[in-house]
Length: 154
Figure 1 (tube, rainbow, N blue to C red):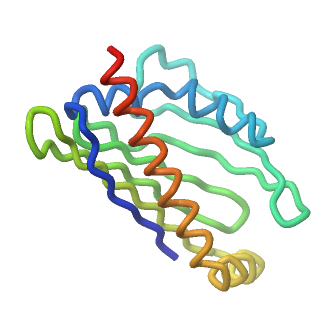
Figure 2: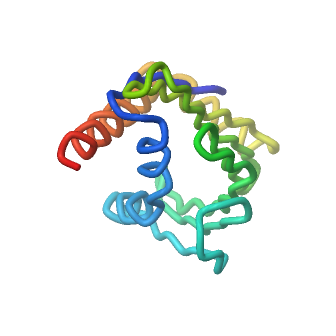
């Protein structure tokens, strides 16, 4: 199952990429939503090999997943894979400079089940794909608006 969104942001690609690399902000955001986030590596700068362990409650059960950054192409792309009990996911972020002050942000999340239990969970999400997809697109739009605001105030 795949979710994707595209957002044009009024800020240079380098600035948008730097905002994407503020991983502490994303960690805090997940924690505010009730997730437990633990950094598993000790890499000082953003790059390939960064890893996180994330635990959160979904549909009445605790879910655990491991995230690992597998691609880091400044200022064009970031790819993070996630592995959990039976579900494999790829989170891909691409940036394209449309002009010196305009950047297109493309975000996709592709999840695939590897076990029967995971297939059942993905099927239940598929039934609500419309609302889940709207929330995904809204989060990407909110991120774009925050980046534009940061760029204007910098």
